[in-house]
Image (tube, rainbow, N blue to C red; front, side, top):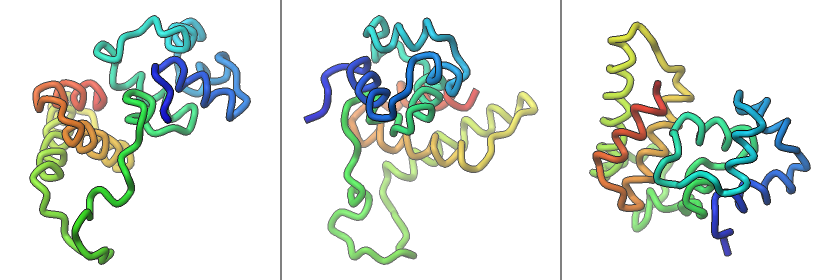
Length: 150
């Protein structure tokens, strides 16, 4: 059963990896106080900054969605009810929307003269897909994607 709070999930993962807040802060390019606030549940899931979520999740080698919401999407969720052919196209409306949101974020960065490396763009599209599948409103996912891309 997943832990109930972001702080308990983060603290549990830190214990599994045997890392302290100072090391997580270094890896996430943030302060130890920020990590302490997360572990102490002084942050609200509704007010988590996308970039910080991704940085901290990467620092503790954890899926960002799992850290934020407490559970991972099953690996087979994308192909539910379909034969598992590696080259099979996914025609899911949700997947299409997730890619569109990631593309919009990339275009917005392009206006600022910035780019995203392909792995970062893929992670943003993946998280957008998972959040849309979770039922978050499209506008909220778009805000998250734009913040993650910044």
